[in-house]
Length: 189
Image (cartoon, rainbow, N blue to C red; front, side, top):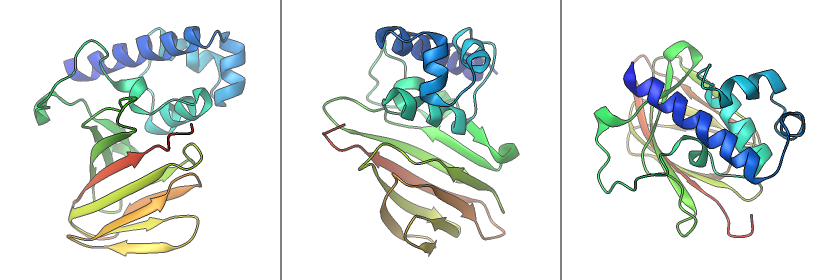
């Protein structure tokens, strides 16, 4: 439980700092992110554990990377131990996102380990214009729907697509699916 509270407090600090740096009131931030003023206030106070979808709304509204909301700005680890990563959970625990390497201004990418339980599903909002995702499936079978097409991927398959349109991920197998995700941001953002 400690990892979840640490993550919740880190998100609270980061969301508030980013909003203040952008000189936005809570009302202006709510309009820009499409997240209610009361929800933003609760997140900034560390009173709620926001979902992945809400965090993406904030990231897109503030025009910042997803991991800038969840990373610890006080340290830059070279090794990230699995047990030290607080997961972000969707679909009642069937879609679990483990942030791995956070976004850095000089790198323009961030990485995640994703675990999707049987029939688990996540519908993702569009990321910033030009954003690309690189997915590799390590086990299981997943279906990824992009703006252009539906893809079914199995063990060892990889996919690159533009993630600046709605897209989704679903485990279409009876076994847990494990995949890696790299999100790449273009320089002109």
